[in-house]
Length: 209
Image (cartoon, rainbow, N blue to C red; front, top):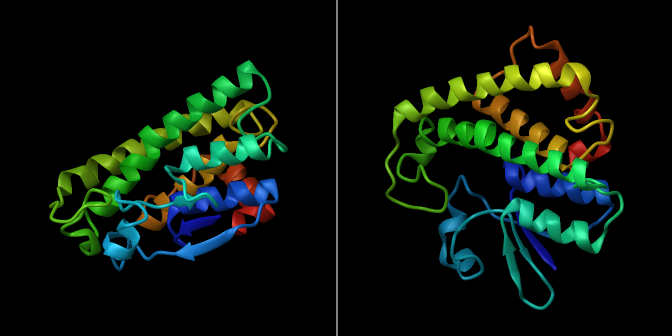
């Protein structure tokens, strides 16, 4: 099987970290989003949506969307469990995944795609001729900072996002906040719980995947 990947992009990184935690090594094919390689015919013949990451199974099946890819490997390699071990932890991890993606990842992507000249005419992933809306960048920054504050309060009483077990929620938050920092939305210095958690998760070997 193959993982169509881009080093430096946050969603492919989520999959790489997940695979590293599982001890899974598969072939990776680099596709440069910044250069628009994901919109070229060669890649579109594999994934017509033009998005990354994409997993191609040995039988030719194509799976895109980060969570779907990670769910596949959670089923094929269940240990260590990264989506929870019981009904409560599974529900809480799913809740945090939705919150991170809607309240932090999407706003961060809005900032990047509506402020960086590279995306001047493709402000929506996988598209051409989609103009930027600068106001979405300003709103995105405000939403991310609000999420930081909420997460900092939560981490005052929790080692990881869901109890004492590192999970896909932590992977997603780590990669998303690192992405936001790259875009220019730094974690405020007074959010000490969040800063301590970031130091802990980024020190894991998988974080370098």
